[in-house]
Length: 225
Image 1 (cartoon, one colour):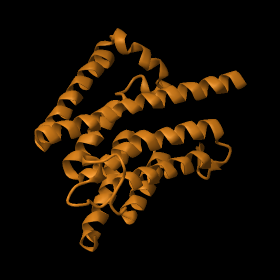
Image 2 (tube, rainbow, N blue to C red):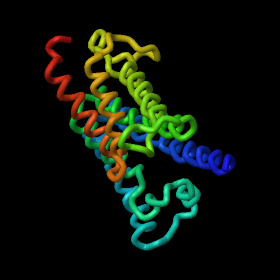
Image 3 (cartoon, helix red, strand yellow):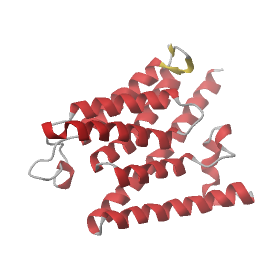
Image 4 (cartoon, rainbow, N blue to C red):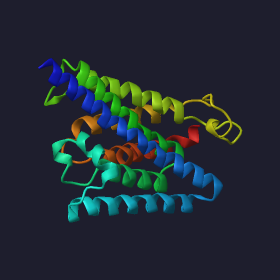
């Protein structure tokens, strides 16, 4: 039983770690946007999305498994093996967020999906001892771990510019006053959505819903910054 549980944890860790490659989407957008412009960067992400669609078409519609990525599918949950992969929903959420929201808010939502979800899955599966009410498959330990990580991500990214520039444009050290109201709203939203959603894909819902809430709050209070 212990060996089975250890393997389950290892498999979940590897499965969620694969999501870290999703950060490439965000980095690609920033690089292309800075070197060319916002529209071309979105077109670049759309091109990447089309490639993923084509790979999933080959896998799901034709039934062929591409050798180079076949190994990755061994770490998918059973329910994920006959539907589109989470990376497609992640990229869709990233494109929508980057097209509509302030860059700070969009980037925060995207990273909350990657690292917040990772924290919830790893801590919850390894140390989860106290199930949440009405959601027995989720634990308080995972919920609180994700909330902490999401708050930290917001603390790093959701800041006021200094001298008209964001800190990541010229430094590796966070600078500028944190926008705490937006940080808390987005962190709580992302954590609740990830916890409550079991049938829909949270890779799409988290950046869009958390980003929407963050953007609304930003528009309402930005005059006070």
